[in-house]
Image (cartoon, rainbow, N blue to C red; front, side, top):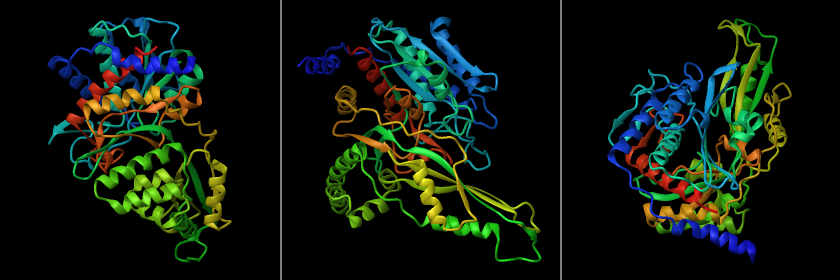
Length: 473
Protein backbone atom coordinates (compact mmCIF):
# COMPACT_ATOMS: atom_id res chain seq x y z
CA UNK A 1 0.00 0.00 0.00
CA UNK A 2 2.87 2.38 0.82
CA UNK A 3 4.45 1.75 -2.57
CA UNK A 4 1.14 2.44 -4.30
CA UNK A 5 0.68 5.71 -2.39
CA UNK A 6 4.23 6.78 -3.24
CA UNK A 7 3.67 6.13 -6.95
CA UNK A 8 0.32 7.92 -6.85
CA UNK A 9 1.96 10.93 -5.23
CA UNK A 10 4.67 10.96 -7.88
CA UNK A 11 2.13 10.85 -10.67
CA UNK A 12 0.04 13.54 -9.07
CA UNK A 13 2.97 15.88 -8.58
CA UNK A 14 2.96 17.13 -12.14
CA UNK A 15 -0.75 18.02 -12.08
CA UNK A 16 -0.56 20.54 -9.26
CA UNK A 17 2.51 22.57 -10.22
CA UNK A 18 1.92 26.14 -11.27
CA UNK A 19 2.03 26.71 -15.01
CA UNK A 20 5.58 27.49 -16.17
CA UNK A 21 6.30 31.00 -17.44
CA UNK A 22 5.58 31.66 -21.09
CA UNK A 23 8.55 32.15 -23.38
CA UNK A 24 9.22 35.50 -25.00
CA UNK A 25 10.32 36.45 -28.54
CA UNK A 26 13.69 37.36 -27.04
CA UNK A 27 13.94 33.87 -25.55
CA UNK A 28 13.26 32.24 -28.90
CA UNK A 29 15.84 34.48 -30.58
CA UNK A 30 18.41 33.50 -27.93
CA UNK A 31 17.73 29.83 -28.66
CA UNK A 32 18.06 30.36 -32.42
CA UNK A 33 21.43 32.06 -31.96
CA UNK A 34 22.67 29.35 -29.60
CA UNK A 35 21.52 26.58 -31.94
CA UNK A 36 23.18 28.29 -34.91
CA UNK A 37 26.48 28.67 -33.08
CA UNK A 38 26.50 25.03 -32.01
CA UNK A 39 25.54 23.69 -35.44
CA UNK A 40 28.10 25.87 -37.22
CA UNK A 41 30.91 24.73 -34.93
CA UNK A 42 32.43 21.85 -36.90
CA UNK A 43 32.61 18.75 -34.70
CA UNK A 44 33.42 16.08 -37.27
CA UNK A 45 36.19 13.61 -36.33
CA UNK A 46 38.38 14.70 -39.26
CA UNK A 47 38.40 18.48 -38.97
CA UNK A 48 36.26 19.56 -36.02
CA UNK A 49 36.56 20.14 -32.31
CA UNK A 50 33.97 19.10 -29.74
CA UNK A 51 36.13 20.86 -27.15
CA UNK A 52 35.57 24.18 -28.93
CA UNK A 53 31.82 23.56 -29.15
CA UNK A 54 31.68 22.72 -25.44
CA UNK A 55 33.67 25.87 -24.61
CA UNK A 56 31.24 28.01 -26.58
CA UNK A 57 28.26 26.52 -24.76
CA UNK A 58 30.02 27.02 -21.42
CA UNK A 59 30.58 30.68 -22.31
CA UNK A 60 26.86 31.14 -22.92
CA UNK A 61 26.00 29.51 -19.61
CA UNK A 62 28.55 31.62 -17.77
CA UNK A 63 27.14 34.78 -19.37
CA UNK A 64 23.71 33.68 -18.12
CA UNK A 65 24.96 33.60 -14.54
CA UNK A 66 26.24 30.06 -14.02
CA UNK A 67 29.24 30.11 -11.66
CA UNK A 68 32.46 28.35 -12.61
CA UNK A 69 31.83 25.89 -9.78
CA UNK A 70 28.81 24.51 -11.68
CA UNK A 71 30.62 24.21 -15.03
CA UNK A 72 32.81 21.13 -15.47
CA UNK A 73 34.62 20.95 -18.81
CA UNK A 74 36.52 17.72 -19.42
CA UNK A 75 38.97 16.25 -21.92
CA UNK A 76 42.04 14.03 -21.93
CA UNK A 77 45.58 14.82 -23.10
CA UNK A 78 45.35 12.01 -25.67
CA UNK A 79 42.14 13.47 -27.19
CA UNK A 80 42.26 17.23 -26.71
CA UNK A 81 39.62 17.95 -29.36
CA UNK A 82 37.13 15.39 -28.02
CA UNK A 83 36.23 17.23 -24.85
CA UNK A 84 32.82 17.88 -23.37
CA UNK A 85 30.98 19.70 -20.64
CA UNK A 86 29.01 18.75 -17.53
CA UNK A 87 26.81 21.39 -15.91
CA UNK A 88 25.17 21.21 -12.48
CA UNK A 89 21.93 23.08 -11.72
CA UNK A 90 21.41 22.55 -7.97
CA UNK A 91 18.03 21.42 -6.64
CA UNK A 92 16.32 22.20 -3.36
CA UNK A 93 16.37 18.67 -1.94
CA UNK A 94 19.85 17.12 -1.76
CA UNK A 95 18.33 13.80 -0.70
CA UNK A 96 16.72 13.28 -4.11
CA UNK A 97 18.83 11.95 -6.95
CA UNK A 98 19.43 14.19 -9.92
CA UNK A 99 18.13 14.05 -13.48
CA UNK A 100 20.75 13.81 -16.24
CA UNK A 101 20.21 15.58 -19.56
CA UNK A 102 22.51 13.88 -22.07
CA UNK A 103 23.42 14.83 -25.65
CA UNK A 104 26.38 14.27 -27.93
CA UNK A 105 27.80 17.18 -29.90
CA UNK A 106 29.94 15.33 -32.44
CA UNK A 107 28.54 14.76 -35.93
CA UNK A 108 29.25 12.45 -38.86
CA UNK A 109 31.34 13.66 -41.78
CA UNK A 110 29.81 15.85 -44.49
CA UNK A 111 31.43 16.84 -47.81
CA UNK A 112 30.54 20.24 -49.26
CA UNK A 113 30.71 18.93 -52.83
CA UNK A 114 27.98 16.39 -52.07
CA UNK A 115 25.53 18.73 -50.33
CA UNK A 116 23.12 21.22 -51.90
CA UNK A 117 24.10 23.73 -49.19
CA UNK A 118 27.20 24.18 -47.03
CA UNK A 119 26.71 21.50 -44.36
CA UNK A 120 28.29 23.69 -41.68
CA UNK A 121 26.20 26.79 -42.31
CA UNK A 122 22.72 26.69 -40.78
CA UNK A 123 20.24 27.53 -43.52
CA UNK A 124 16.55 28.21 -42.88
CA UNK A 125 14.62 27.42 -46.02
CA UNK A 126 11.08 26.28 -46.84
CA UNK A 127 10.20 25.90 -43.15
CA UNK A 128 13.23 23.76 -42.29
CA UNK A 129 16.74 24.13 -40.90
CA UNK A 130 19.42 22.44 -43.03
CA UNK A 131 22.89 21.52 -41.74
CA UNK A 132 24.94 18.59 -40.52
CA UNK A 133 23.81 17.98 -36.95
CA UNK A 134 20.56 19.92 -37.42
CA UNK A 135 18.90 16.94 -35.73
CA UNK A 136 21.60 14.50 -34.68
CA UNK A 137 22.22 15.53 -31.98
CA UNK A 138 22.73 19.26 -31.83
CA UNK A 139 19.00 19.91 -31.73
CA UNK A 140 18.64 18.32 -28.31
CA UNK A 141 22.04 19.57 -27.13
CA UNK A 142 21.00 23.15 -27.92
CA UNK A 143 17.65 22.59 -26.21
CA UNK A 144 19.37 21.39 -23.03
CA UNK A 145 21.71 24.41 -22.89
CA UNK A 146 18.88 26.83 -23.62
CA UNK A 147 16.64 25.12 -21.07
CA UNK A 148 19.17 25.67 -18.28
CA UNK A 149 19.67 29.31 -19.28
CA UNK A 150 15.92 29.81 -19.31
CA UNK A 151 15.48 28.24 -15.88
CA UNK A 152 18.17 30.47 -14.38
CA UNK A 153 16.69 33.60 -15.95
CA UNK A 154 13.38 32.69 -14.28
CA UNK A 155 15.05 31.94 -10.92
CA UNK A 156 13.48 28.49 -11.09
CA UNK A 157 14.49 26.26 -8.18
CA UNK A 158 13.76 22.61 -8.98
CA UNK A 159 13.24 20.04 -6.27
CA UNK A 160 15.79 17.73 -7.92
CA UNK A 161 19.24 18.73 -9.12
CA UNK A 162 19.58 18.85 -12.89
CA UNK A 163 22.77 17.76 -14.62
CA UNK A 164 23.63 18.23 -18.27
CA UNK A 165 26.38 16.34 -20.10
CA UNK A 166 27.49 17.33 -23.60
CA UNK A 167 29.77 14.60 -24.88
CA UNK A 168 31.82 13.66 -27.93
CA UNK A 169 32.45 10.40 -29.76
CA UNK A 170 28.97 8.91 -30.05
CA UNK A 171 29.19 8.72 -33.84
CA UNK A 172 32.58 7.29 -34.84
CA UNK A 173 35.08 8.70 -32.38
CA UNK A 174 37.85 6.65 -30.78
CA UNK A 175 37.20 8.49 -27.50
CA UNK A 176 33.66 8.44 -26.14
CA UNK A 177 32.88 11.11 -23.57
CA UNK A 178 29.83 9.38 -22.13
CA UNK A 179 31.77 6.17 -21.58
CA UNK A 180 34.67 8.12 -20.05
CA UNK A 181 32.34 9.90 -17.62
CA UNK A 182 30.78 6.64 -16.44
CA UNK A 183 34.23 5.16 -15.83
CA UNK A 184 36.08 8.18 -14.46
CA UNK A 185 33.57 10.73 -13.14
CA UNK A 186 30.48 8.73 -12.30
CA UNK A 187 29.91 11.03 -9.31
CA UNK A 188 29.60 14.00 -11.65
CA UNK A 189 26.78 12.48 -13.70
CA UNK A 190 25.11 10.17 -11.18
CA UNK A 191 21.35 10.44 -11.52
CA UNK A 192 18.04 8.71 -10.94
CA UNK A 193 17.57 8.56 -14.71
CA UNK A 194 18.68 10.29 -17.90
CA UNK A 195 16.96 11.82 -20.91
CA UNK A 196 18.81 11.36 -24.17
CA UNK A 197 18.35 11.14 -27.93
CA UNK A 198 16.98 7.93 -29.40
CA UNK A 199 13.37 8.43 -30.47
CA UNK A 200 11.33 11.07 -32.25
CA UNK A 201 7.81 11.60 -33.38
CA UNK A 202 6.75 9.90 -36.61
CA UNK A 203 5.18 11.67 -39.61
CA UNK A 204 3.66 9.84 -42.53
CA UNK A 205 4.62 10.69 -46.12
CA UNK A 206 2.03 13.49 -46.22
CA UNK A 207 3.33 15.12 -43.04
CA UNK A 208 0.59 13.91 -40.68
CA UNK A 209 1.71 13.04 -37.14
CA UNK A 210 1.42 9.31 -36.48
CA UNK A 211 2.97 8.72 -33.07
CA UNK A 212 5.28 10.17 -30.45
CA UNK A 213 7.86 7.49 -29.70
CA UNK A 214 9.86 6.96 -26.51
CA UNK A 215 12.93 4.75 -26.64
CA UNK A 216 12.58 1.85 -24.22
CA UNK A 217 15.65 -0.05 -25.36
CA UNK A 218 18.16 -0.18 -28.18
CA UNK A 219 20.07 -2.73 -30.17
CA UNK A 220 23.80 -3.26 -29.76
CA UNK A 221 25.88 -1.84 -32.62
CA UNK A 222 28.90 -4.02 -33.38
CA UNK A 223 31.30 -4.23 -36.32
CA UNK A 224 32.52 -7.54 -37.74
CA UNK A 225 35.45 -7.96 -40.11
CA UNK A 226 35.36 -10.30 -43.11
CA UNK A 227 38.86 -10.77 -44.50
CA UNK A 228 40.52 -12.83 -47.24
CA UNK A 229 44.28 -13.05 -47.77
CA UNK A 230 45.96 -14.41 -50.88
CA UNK A 231 49.48 -14.65 -52.39
CA UNK A 232 48.31 -12.43 -55.27
CA UNK A 233 50.38 -12.10 -58.41
CA UNK A 234 50.47 -10.31 -61.76
CA UNK A 235 47.08 -9.22 -63.14
CA UNK A 236 48.07 -10.51 -66.59
CA UNK A 237 47.86 -14.04 -65.16
CA UNK A 238 44.47 -14.15 -63.40
CA UNK A 239 43.40 -17.20 -61.42
CA UNK A 240 40.03 -18.24 -60.03
CA UNK A 241 41.23 -17.96 -56.44
CA UNK A 242 40.84 -14.17 -56.17
CA UNK A 243 40.53 -12.49 -52.76
CA UNK A 244 38.08 -9.85 -53.99
CA UNK A 245 35.88 -12.42 -55.67
CA UNK A 246 35.78 -14.58 -52.56
CA UNK A 247 34.88 -11.63 -50.39
CA UNK A 248 32.19 -10.45 -52.81
CA UNK A 249 30.59 -13.90 -52.85
CA UNK A 250 30.65 -14.04 -49.06
CA UNK A 251 29.01 -10.61 -48.76
CA UNK A 252 26.31 -11.68 -51.19
CA UNK A 253 25.41 -14.63 -48.99
CA UNK A 254 25.28 -12.40 -45.90
CA UNK A 255 23.08 -9.86 -47.70
CA UNK A 256 20.60 -12.55 -48.73
CA UNK A 257 19.98 -13.69 -45.15
CA UNK A 258 17.32 -12.41 -42.75
CA UNK A 259 17.92 -13.03 -39.07
CA UNK A 260 14.93 -14.54 -37.24
CA UNK A 261 12.27 -12.27 -35.77
CA UNK A 262 12.38 -11.65 -32.01
CA UNK A 263 10.06 -9.88 -29.59
CA UNK A 264 10.43 -8.07 -26.29
CA UNK A 265 8.19 -5.71 -24.35
CA UNK A 266 9.32 -2.65 -26.32
CA UNK A 267 8.65 -3.82 -29.86
CA UNK A 268 5.49 -5.67 -28.82
CA UNK A 269 4.08 -2.46 -27.35
CA UNK A 270 5.14 -0.50 -30.43
CA UNK A 271 3.45 -2.82 -32.93
CA UNK A 272 0.33 -3.13 -30.77
CA UNK A 273 -0.02 0.66 -30.90
CA UNK A 274 1.02 0.91 -34.55
CA UNK A 275 -1.61 -1.66 -35.56
CA UNK A 276 -4.30 0.67 -34.22
CA UNK A 277 -2.77 3.60 -36.09
CA UNK A 278 -2.61 1.67 -39.36
CA UNK A 279 -6.21 0.54 -38.96
CA UNK A 280 -7.34 4.14 -38.40
CA UNK A 281 -5.47 5.17 -41.58
CA UNK A 282 -7.31 2.56 -43.62
CA UNK A 283 -4.32 0.22 -43.89
CA UNK A 284 -6.35 -2.80 -42.81
CA UNK A 285 -4.00 -5.41 -44.29
CA UNK A 286 -0.97 -3.99 -42.47
CA UNK A 287 -2.90 -3.69 -39.20
CA UNK A 288 -4.15 -7.26 -39.49
CA UNK A 289 -0.62 -8.50 -40.20
CA UNK A 290 0.74 -6.74 -37.10
CA UNK A 291 -1.99 -8.18 -34.91
CA UNK A 292 -1.43 -11.60 -36.48
CA UNK A 293 2.27 -11.84 -35.63
CA UNK A 294 1.64 -10.43 -32.16
CA UNK A 295 -0.73 -13.37 -31.61
CA UNK A 296 1.57 -15.82 -33.37
CA UNK A 297 5.23 -14.78 -33.72
CA UNK A 298 5.66 -17.65 -36.16
CA UNK A 299 3.27 -16.16 -38.73
CA UNK A 300 5.80 -15.87 -41.55
CA UNK A 301 3.36 -14.33 -44.03
CA UNK A 302 2.37 -11.51 -41.68
CA UNK A 303 5.99 -10.84 -40.72
CA UNK A 304 7.07 -10.73 -44.34
CA UNK A 305 4.37 -8.19 -45.19
CA UNK A 306 5.26 -5.83 -42.33
CA UNK A 307 9.03 -6.21 -42.81
CA UNK A 308 8.76 -5.25 -46.47
CA UNK A 309 6.69 -2.13 -45.81
CA UNK A 310 9.24 -0.11 -43.84
CA UNK A 311 12.97 -0.70 -43.19
CA UNK A 312 12.54 0.69 -39.68
CA UNK A 313 9.84 -1.87 -38.91
CA UNK A 314 12.08 -4.65 -40.22
CA UNK A 315 15.01 -3.41 -38.12
CA UNK A 316 12.86 -3.31 -34.99
CA UNK A 317 11.98 -6.97 -35.39
CA UNK A 318 15.37 -8.66 -35.76
CA UNK A 319 19.14 -8.47 -35.74
CA UNK A 320 20.42 -6.89 -38.95
CA UNK A 321 23.85 -6.99 -40.58
CA UNK A 322 25.00 -4.90 -43.54
CA UNK A 323 28.30 -4.27 -45.32
CA UNK A 324 29.42 -0.66 -44.76
CA UNK A 325 33.12 -0.46 -45.75
CA UNK A 326 35.41 -2.19 -48.27
CA UNK A 327 39.21 -2.26 -48.51
CA UNK A 328 40.80 -4.47 -51.14
CA UNK A 329 43.84 -4.76 -53.36
CA UNK A 330 47.13 -2.87 -53.42
CA UNK A 331 47.70 -2.04 -57.09
CA UNK A 332 45.66 -1.70 -60.28
CA UNK A 333 47.92 -4.18 -62.10
CA UNK A 334 48.20 -6.83 -59.40
CA UNK A 335 46.00 -9.59 -58.09
CA UNK A 336 44.69 -8.62 -54.66
CA UNK A 337 46.62 -9.99 -51.72
CA UNK A 338 44.00 -8.86 -49.22
CA UNK A 339 40.29 -8.02 -49.31
CA UNK A 340 38.48 -6.78 -46.24
CA UNK A 341 34.93 -5.68 -45.46
CA UNK A 342 33.32 -4.14 -42.43
CA UNK A 343 29.89 -5.56 -41.64
CA UNK A 344 27.91 -3.51 -39.15
CA UNK A 345 25.39 -5.49 -37.14
CA UNK A 346 22.63 -4.15 -34.92
CA UNK A 347 22.08 -6.95 -32.46
CA UNK A 348 18.73 -7.62 -30.83
CA UNK A 349 18.80 -7.27 -27.02
CA UNK A 350 19.79 -10.53 -25.37
CA UNK A 351 21.48 -12.02 -28.44
CA UNK A 352 25.16 -12.92 -28.08
CA UNK A 353 27.72 -11.11 -30.26
CA UNK A 354 29.58 -14.40 -30.59
CA UNK A 355 26.41 -16.13 -31.78
CA UNK A 356 26.07 -13.49 -34.50
CA UNK A 357 29.72 -13.95 -35.49
CA UNK A 358 29.20 -17.70 -35.72
CA UNK A 359 26.11 -17.17 -37.89
CA UNK A 360 28.04 -14.88 -40.23
CA UNK A 361 30.79 -17.49 -40.54
CA UNK A 362 28.12 -20.11 -41.32
CA UNK A 363 26.61 -17.88 -44.01
CA UNK A 364 30.01 -17.09 -45.52
CA UNK A 365 30.61 -20.84 -45.88
CA UNK A 366 34.23 -20.31 -46.93
CA UNK A 367 37.10 -21.13 -44.56
CA UNK A 368 39.32 -18.65 -46.40
CA UNK A 369 37.03 -15.77 -45.36
CA UNK A 370 37.85 -15.07 -41.74
CA UNK A 371 35.07 -13.53 -39.64
CA UNK A 372 36.27 -11.72 -36.54
CA UNK A 373 35.19 -9.08 -34.03
CA UNK A 374 37.96 -6.46 -34.20
CA UNK A 375 36.83 -4.48 -31.18
CA UNK A 376 36.27 -5.40 -27.56
CA UNK A 377 32.62 -5.68 -26.61
CA UNK A 378 30.73 -6.28 -23.41
CA UNK A 379 27.20 -7.54 -22.92
CA UNK A 380 24.36 -5.30 -24.07
CA UNK A 381 22.79 -3.45 -21.13
CA UNK A 382 19.21 -4.29 -20.18
CA UNK A 383 16.50 -1.88 -21.34
CA UNK A 384 15.43 0.75 -18.79
CA UNK A 385 12.13 0.14 -16.95
CA UNK A 386 9.44 2.19 -18.70
CA UNK A 387 7.40 3.04 -15.61
CA UNK A 388 4.26 5.13 -15.35
CA UNK A 389 6.26 7.78 -13.48
CA UNK A 390 8.32 8.20 -16.67
CA UNK A 391 5.57 7.74 -19.24
CA UNK A 392 2.66 9.60 -17.65
CA UNK A 393 4.18 13.11 -17.93
CA UNK A 394 5.13 12.44 -21.56
CA UNK A 395 1.60 11.28 -22.32
CA UNK A 396 0.08 14.30 -20.56
CA UNK A 397 2.17 16.82 -22.50
CA UNK A 398 1.75 14.97 -25.79
CA UNK A 399 -2.04 15.21 -25.38
CA UNK A 400 -1.70 18.95 -24.79
CA UNK A 401 0.73 19.65 -27.65
CA UNK A 402 -0.61 17.21 -30.24
CA UNK A 403 -4.10 15.98 -29.29
CA UNK A 404 -4.87 12.47 -30.48
CA UNK A 405 -1.23 11.48 -31.12
CA UNK A 406 -0.42 8.29 -29.14
CA UNK A 407 2.80 7.77 -27.19
CA UNK A 408 4.47 4.50 -28.20
CA UNK A 409 7.43 2.74 -26.57
CA UNK A 410 9.95 1.65 -29.16
CA UNK A 411 12.99 -0.59 -29.47
CA UNK A 412 15.41 1.43 -31.57
CA UNK A 413 17.56 -0.32 -34.17
CA UNK A 414 20.35 2.22 -33.71
CA UNK A 415 22.61 2.74 -30.73
CA UNK A 416 23.22 5.85 -28.62
CA UNK A 417 25.35 6.83 -25.65
CA UNK A 418 22.55 5.36 -23.55
CA UNK A 419 24.39 2.06 -23.92
CA UNK A 420 27.01 3.41 -21.47
CA UNK A 421 24.70 5.13 -18.99
CA UNK A 422 22.29 2.19 -18.88
CA UNK A 423 25.21 -0.16 -18.29
CA UNK A 424 26.37 2.14 -15.47
CA UNK A 425 23.01 1.83 -13.74
CA UNK A 426 21.48 5.13 -14.89
CA UNK A 427 18.20 4.25 -16.67
CA UNK A 428 18.27 6.24 -19.91
CA UNK A 429 15.24 7.10 -22.05
CA UNK A 430 15.23 8.42 -25.60
CA UNK A 431 12.92 11.45 -25.72
CA UNK A 432 13.31 13.89 -28.63
CA UNK A 433 9.86 15.42 -29.23
CA UNK A 434 10.44 16.54 -32.81
CA UNK A 435 8.60 14.91 -35.69
CA UNK A 436 10.34 13.48 -38.75
CA UNK A 437 9.07 11.75 -41.85
CA UNK A 438 10.00 8.42 -43.42
CA UNK A 439 13.40 9.84 -44.46
CA UNK A 440 14.23 10.59 -40.79
CA UNK A 441 15.34 14.08 -41.77
CA UNK A 442 18.25 12.59 -43.77
CA UNK A 443 20.16 11.93 -40.54
CA UNK A 444 23.71 10.72 -41.40
CA UNK A 445 22.93 11.48 -45.05
CA UNK A 446 22.93 14.39 -47.47
CA UNK A 447 21.11 17.62 -46.63
CA UNK A 448 20.13 16.74 -43.05
CA UNK A 449 17.20 18.88 -41.95
CA UNK A 450 14.61 19.51 -39.25
CA UNK A 451 11.34 21.42 -39.39
CA UNK A 452 11.64 24.83 -37.73
CA UNK A 453 8.18 24.59 -36.14
CA UNK A 454 8.87 21.05 -34.97
CA UNK A 455 12.18 22.07 -33.36
CA UNK A 456 10.59 24.98 -31.52
CA UNK A 457 7.73 22.78 -30.31
CA UNK A 458 10.24 20.19 -29.12
CA UNK A 459 12.13 22.89 -27.24
CA UNK A 460 8.98 23.94 -25.38
CA UNK A 461 7.95 20.33 -24.74
CA UNK A 462 11.28 19.42 -23.11
CA UNK A 463 11.34 22.67 -21.12
CA UNK A 464 8.03 21.70 -19.55
CA UNK A 465 8.78 17.96 -19.27
CA UNK A 466 12.02 18.48 -17.33
CA UNK A 467 10.23 20.83 -14.93
CA UNK A 468 7.65 18.12 -14.27
CA UNK A 469 10.29 15.49 -13.55
CA UNK A 470 12.44 17.91 -11.54
CA UNK A 471 9.59 18.71 -9.15
CA UNK A 472 8.49 15.11 -8.57
CA UNK A 473 9.08 13.74 -5.11
